[in-house]
Image: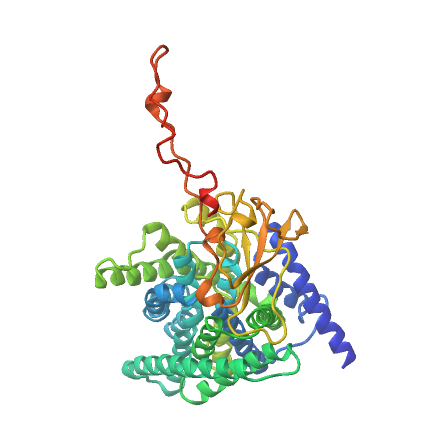
Length: 526
């Protein structure tokens, strides 16, 4: 037992440290997590024998639920409402189109038979929440586009899962009604969303009302409640992934006690789930078997990235634009980026285990092809999202992450929060004294971090560009960040071209008299 703990802990540490390598060289961290698992597997130097597909499937699904819950916590209602219709269509119609087009291309371009091609399309039809959240974090994409991609990846797994299960059942029974397939998807999505909303509201009530002795118990309470909702939804004919995403969405946008500690805990839990999931999948792989699947996998990777996903996205978003008379209009660069950002990750590999457990003919080949496709696709797309967004003119500069985190611990009032505001050069507060700013009564400036040093705010303190300002608000949802820190300064008026171009000897325009109204020198500070 002790030896197993040493080996497991060493693999996790190696995987986490490899993330630093990925940041430096631009390689997606998830690929390195898989590489660590392959290094330790039966075909690697450590030679660990592991081939328990059933255990891997259960661990993978549970880890995915944790990742999706964390993604829901980070999603803002405003962006979600703007993205829910296009993302919902991409998560349903888009997945069906992607799976169908890819299945036809695989059947036509590779030696795979029809059933194997259909399974391949179903397994690879959805995007992966873990891979998408990791790839988009800190990329500076426009808010609406990022919301569409994250909402789609967090909600499209149910369709892929249901398609895979239905095709596996069809392989055993020999027939499946199309009406039953569509009705099953709609029922699961609808019930899952309903269960998630009810469970989320109930969990907010419990967290805000219960008085626990240890503040560290609140994140555990939130995670346990979300997983309970996930399990009950699956038992109740809903979809647990939709349920747990909606629970996270409700918690992340409610007036919630211990919000910051819950979000921080879940961020770490999501990363831990990704490490565990991908290292485990790496242990399952056998590199000597993947060589035979490589030619088909390369064809499928290119067909998916260059044909199936782009056609499905363009058709879905184009139909949405026509149906809403241009209300939901996406430009060609936006459609291109959404198509290219359809990342695959652990979900297809986990789904490829299902046919293996059901002993479907050709299931081993499906698993091997999917494994290679995920690795190739993640390397190809994950490493090029940022350059592509920059080339398309869609990249936005994001403020740096705060080097110091302040939070309200203990029994902080519900709704109270700490804001970290990064002052860019055009913020209204830059160059102003604290005493000259209009700040709401229930907002307190707790500190200023400047050049790595903590500055005590006083009335005479002048704010500078690059400052991290920490604000405490008693009612964060209704007050928000004061305009002095969130608003931008108006651009300076352009000099009069007539005056600048006046010829020598020609009198310039008269200067305004003292009687004319003049703006105060500190107008921007009030």
